Amino acid sequence: MRWKIIIVNGGIVLLVGILSFGLLFTTLGDVVANPRQAQSDAERAIRAANAVLELDALRSERWLNEKALTEEVQSVFQAGTERARNEGATEQANTIHGAASNDPLFAKMAPALVLFVDKSGTALGRNGSNLMRGDKTGEAYDSLMKAIKSGRTMSAMWLSREREEQLLVSYAPVRGEGGEVLGALVMGTPLNDERLSRTSEMTSDRQLVLGVPATDKLEVVAKSANAQGEVVAAANDATVAQGAIATMKSGNATVLDGAPEGLLLAAAPLMGYSETPTVILAAVPSSLVPSVAGLLWPVLAVAGFALVLVVVGGMLLGNYISRPVEEIEDGLLQIINGKANLRFELEHPELGGLVTRINSLLNAFMDVAETDEAGRPSRPPSAAGYDG
Image (cartoon, rainbow, N blue to C red; front, side, top):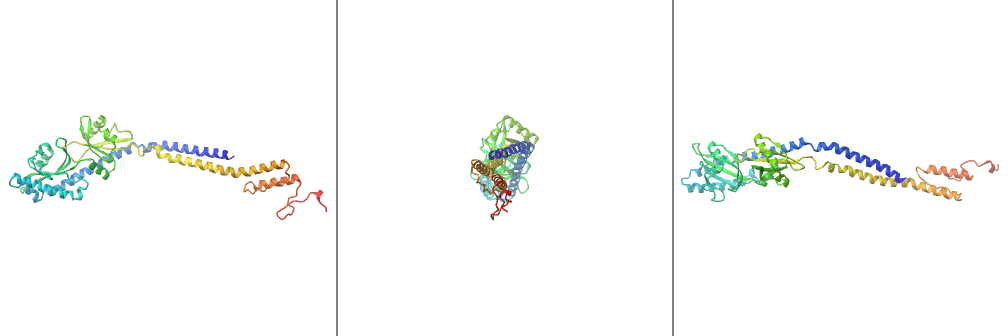
């Protein structure tokens, strides 16, 4: 009996568990693999990263412009000799670099370069060393000359393997007493993996990759710490590169073809920086969860636990009923074999009444008077045995 109970109830539990898993798998499949949601997440990640980097540029420009208005900076360009200008430029560059490094505004992105250039774009001096004096920086970077000629603050990306420079720089024109532009103050912060990791942490915490077009691929300039190798490798894919380059014309974030399995890639041009055309890639999971089956495994786990309970409960329930029945069966067999005086003394909530009726039936067959607990007859004696 116990196995019948276990099989029937276990089958019901197993069937309900499998049906629940199947229905939820079908229903949630479309929900968790929502391409619109994934696309929205990727575009939001790019916009947020772009906003942070652009805000960094604006803050640097404003901070640098305040320094460019000081008499100490202006005096560098007004020195009488070239050597005096060079020495003054290096001294002030060191001072400005120290101030920026201690300013919370530049937390985790301390400037690597502070440079003075004259109105022709020639370097006068930089922080930390005498290098770059006389360097034709304006010829290497057109954006610097545009800032000097226009007299406006600007930001740009300096990316040159020959010059070993990879910086996000800001320019602040320096004016004389009559308002004429004497030159510019340049400050550059590192453009590296740490910088992009900081940007990711401050925004969406998504995988970010910064790249510049190079023939049929994107040359990776920087990547966030959480960027997987397959995402970085995707930048070398021609399909991804073509889609990313196309976004530079539209100016909008676009979902790219050729993304690694399980991911969605979107790209948009980097805003707020001139000089080097750059795109920023964001990778997000194409599904809200790694797998629907992984999400629903608790359903099967609960069904398995329910089967264990069915087995335990079936064993207990079967024993609860089977043991008294076996005892009654054994007793009846003994009575059949000649032990006529045997009566059942079994207390059982469900079978107790049946045992009492069996005892009564045996007494009736054996013509034995039944007595109550006090020893009194519980039924009238037969007429033949009555003495009057």
